[in-house]
Length: 76
Image: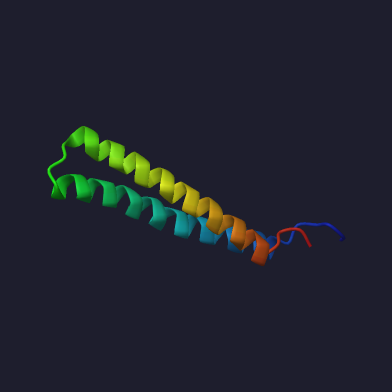
């Protein structure tokens, strides 16, 4: 079927997105929490650092998924 969905690639990309996304967001939030605790910056600064690092992590995940879709095309 021309233009159909390649389910093998779809499952691969979704699975790797979930795995890598969980790790990236977890590391980003943990880094913000750890830096705030290490330097005694307070709870509000810790939340701000987690937000900034979380946003950077989301951007990194976006770039990763874009590259994954280039290498594993869903449309055949």
